[in-house]
Length: 285
Image (cartoon, rainbow, N blue to C red; front, side, top):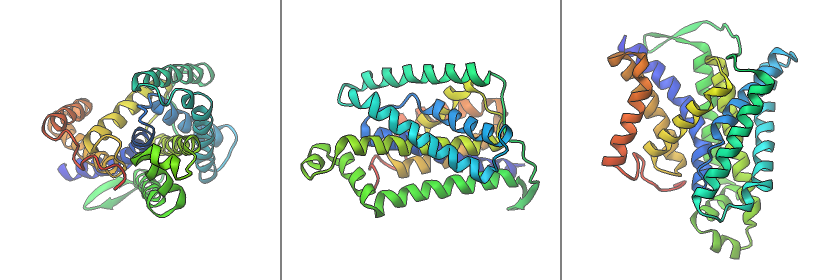
């Protein structure tokens, strides 16, 4: 029984890492607490679901298209709206993204309704470390972790990644070096939206998804970023895995209904005992 919960927690943690890494990236580079993040996860899920169920697009095509659509959406939102206030105090950008979240959430409710929907899959289960694990969970976790590691590689081994890190470290010095700050901000926000869309596609394979769940995903992303260190991409990976395992252990000890509570208790403990997070606040290092 313990092994089953821990394996499920580890698989869920991989999805959580993908869910939070875009949130951490935007927070670290733009210094924006993106309240729109949860709705972008839902939006990515629904683009994928509608593509598969209503237009007959294969899943392996619909999911990348959803990610591309979310990148374009995030890029446009940052260039058109957030970039106008990005230099303002953090409360201003928080309020703006919260308002955008309400708009997107209500538009989703209007067009797709409040009934939870998911991608119906039946790939069976396999033995993993002596316990049964659904193939769809394993696949979702592997895709999420792969994308997260690709993002980490991009940040460290590409010209764009080095520019993003430079802006994150000192935006004024980066501007003096010729880096176009607004362009980097927009690309960073677009990448964050892409990761949110990827997480949404993976979540739709496992959980019924509804527009009103955006707050749940936003809360998970926030907890993970606090656990790993605010704005830290590696910390988001660590925090996602830790939260998934903690929720699995909490479900076994106290019941599934207490899983979310365990996450918040863990977050408060980290704030008190390790304010810089489990991985320390080292940005992208």
